[in-house]
Amino acid sequence: MPKVRTKDLIEHFQLELIGGENGIDRPIKTSDLSRPGIEMAGFFTYYPADRVQLLGMTELTFFETLTPEQKRDRMNALCTPKTPCIIVTRGQQVPLELMEAACEANVPLLLSTQKTTRLSSRLTNYLESKLAPTTAVHGVLVDIYGVGVLITGSSGVGKSETALELVKRGHRLVADDSVEIRQEDEDTLIGSSPELIEHLLEIRGLGIINVMTLFGAGAVRNHKRISLVIHLEIWDQKKNYDRLGLDEEKMKIIDTDLTKITLPVRPGRNLAVIIEVAAMNFRLKRMGVNAAQQFSERLMNAIETKEE
Image (cartoon, rainbow, N blue to C red):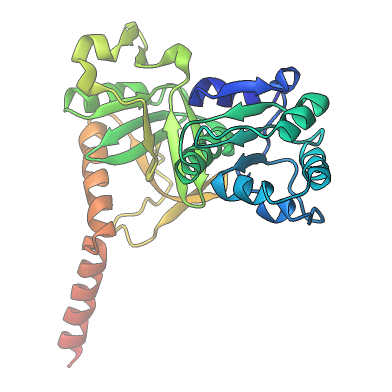
């Protein structure tokens, strides 16, 4: 099922439909837009027909210099079975030739009062968000000191209970149990909660609780960029866990590599505090302060001094 159709643009941007109403269910498959200036001059060899077409003042001013026959030919070539819609900006008068071609080909013809550049920017942002690659991850997403921390682990390891303690400590819940993730850029992952379980936490033995109702609107967020993954696992005595923090583990989600920290879980460990410190330490590393690296350098200096 297509993620975006022409009718979604009409509703979201309050565009006026003035022709080709039978095509409003056409799918939009790319966030790229087209301003068909060179096509107005008659060059259609590389015409990106599957894009939303924007006609601004420049295109329509040039169009008025054409002969009646050229006008009809250009508009007929512009309206194809693949074209999702044609938007005329700045509230300009729609050429009769365009109206006739759009109605004949059932291409939705839309009118906007916004400036072309402004509308182009808003359309691109909207389509990139809607058409971005998506996935879902089992885990909990919490905003800790501005760092989006995705907490993963097997069922029953204590993810939701840890999230509850973090919320009590003043941090904000984004999603529990299922985190919907979309990739908005090469290195930007945005996490959110499915609408059905938004603001809810499941605590075994207690049931479902509404975090916003219990702790207020300041305890939740609708979405957050994911920067750090913390994986919880039952403490394995035979496994050697990282004690210095020099080795940085990575986890790939869609096409983005995220820093991953594995925390062993056992009775007595205050996971909420450890995760809180991990988020602060992650922020420090991004600012260029690496405690593990500083310790390693200090240790090497001490060894070299002793050898001399």
